[in-house]
Length: 270
Image 1 (cartoon, one colour):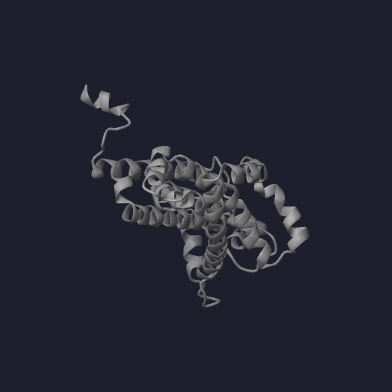
Image 2 (cartoon, rainbow, N blue to C red):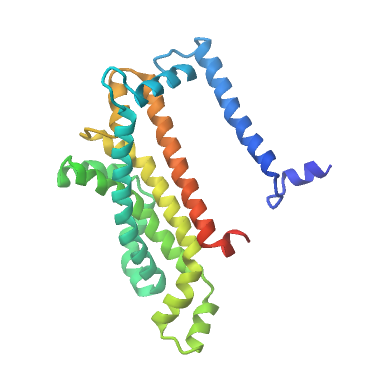
């Protein structure tokens, strides 16, 4: 009876072992269904390679004995480099603009019509325009990742600042702070945990766009590796590349969540 009550209780705490086994069970269930579908021949290997075929392809990509090189390591370093470069731009531009919009209704009214529509629009539709304007080189790929992430980051940072109760701003003003000092020393520190959430979402968005960015004339990168494998109908390598991107995105997400818990324990332990 108590289990049925806690099942639909969003505040119920699971034991770490229970949470771990539920996650492992879900992954195993997917692998079993995948293996059955691929092994039974219901779906052709050219569409759904078996897990063991993907594992074999992953081993080949990790180390190509014939070429004496790691195709996967080279591709990963290029993709990570592009995400880091675009991420740096996103943080340098997105956070200050979002804070200004959140702190000033006038700045928000000025910039919102230019930024908010892209929050719901497919940024991929802008790719042909970027190719025409910026060519097919490295700058276009980084810019595409930047645009894809910053249109989410700016509104989320603005909303984080505006979500802080006004009482904190008024209290700072009562203590003699100027309006901007009240924002900088009272409102902004309180909004930092939600701004950290916005950064985490933005970096995750960049990982979802990396394959699109690297489809256009990339010489190296995970997207280019997947594109080449698809061209030669090597679906096992396509799946291997996708799994690596998912693993990198998950590792990045967990790393940033860990950093957030360390930086803002007072918020994450509530």
